[in-house]
Length: 84
Image 1: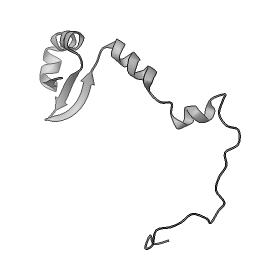
Image 2: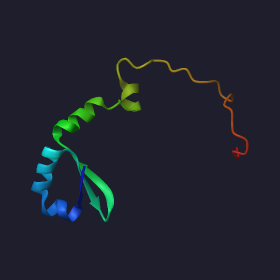
Image 3: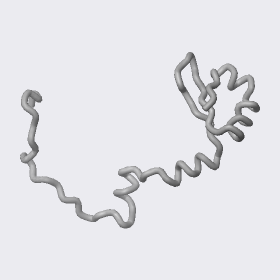
């Protein structure tokens, strides 16, 4: 993966885009810190399709369990010295 300082990425955006298409993801840095990655739309869609659903999506899904069993109150074990 090639690394581009943000100044170069801005000044040579067309080249950055071409590199993304031909060479794969491109890393953009700001003040030396990794900040963003440019990827193709095809890669973005692939990543979105394999992503796990969030807890909210799972609970709101039509096949979500209607009843969730919770442990009885007061049965949780606490670590010694936890200050509770």
